[in-house]
Image (cartoon, rainbow, N blue to C red; front, side, top):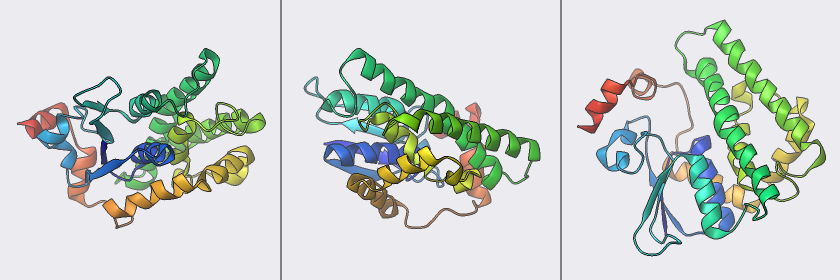
Length: 238
């Protein structure tokens, strides 16, 4: 049984996508990031970077005990290796998947995240910042579009953890100032993943945890989400 500590954000959806595809039993624990639940001592013991998602695997492949992991990319890799699913075993196929997994973790996620912040959450709209991140996100969509020109999925003909990592960051394309009509290969790939039954099941878990759609953050939520420093984190731990 997997305990999943989760909030319905792109990184949270990555893990439910895998668990639903693989048919792994899991218990969902909501971590309300707008209320600061990511700073509780109990959660920090699992995820010291105070970010979700995180998991505790109570039946690890190695045997007795439990395994705690944070960072969504590391979780996907762990689950793929545990189950033998959605990650090729040959060196070439594995490397194809991993480089695109890391492309999302190091590129698409951070850049799209900054786009969301400066377009939708920043109290002051700074044109340079908005343009910088919208344009870089657009460039990354172009990279993905080119990659998908001659293959069904990011790493080839098989659905993989690379697709699971990337897809949730494309779902809010409109909030990123992007138009999928400009990227026909991405659009085709996006529709194919959206139509998978496991994708439907994974995204249905979100409203169970957060029935209210995202909106303008309160000042208290802004402070919790965007006003942290090393000093404030240390205070939260004590």
